[in-house]
Image (tube, rainbow, N blue to C red; front, side):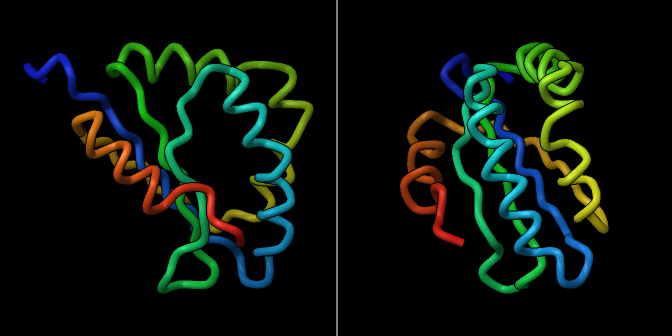
Length: 119
């Protein structure tokens, strides 16, 4: 990416096993503060507007190196492995990551329009 002001945005979508929505929300309530405390910029999290058993988590990074370093450190930590990890995994049918480059203004628009919604 040639625009230094742009940030790499990861859109992670989760498809849950039927009937696991409440358990997933509870596990994410424990996980999100840990994700933020690790230094990752959580832009938005919430339930899909069109599918009850689908959720999104959107995070922003300076670049691919920062994404890799922050996620490796977080997902390799004992706090994650011994904490909410298994409760979240038990709820998942599948998930998908998509990476996009966006301007800071676009990220702030995502944050304000799709922030941490009540679930």
